[in-house]
Image: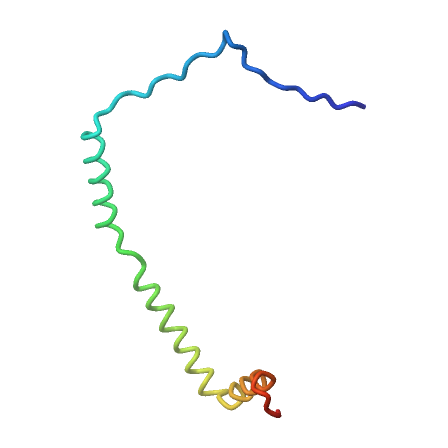
Length: 89
């Protein structure tokens, strides 16, 4: 079984110049883009309530865990830092 590689070439006589893009006045395009951008910025308020909810829920979880397991969390932290501080466990 053999594998053949084929190279595709454009012949010089078949190459046609690329079609020119339709001419538009720069002044005509910019106001349309500016108006579109302005409409999107006014309409896009973001997801602030969602982020606030996520932040509050995260804070509530931390407070709840700290209230239930504060001694264990402090012990885990002290055990993790002991090798770096040179203290006994």
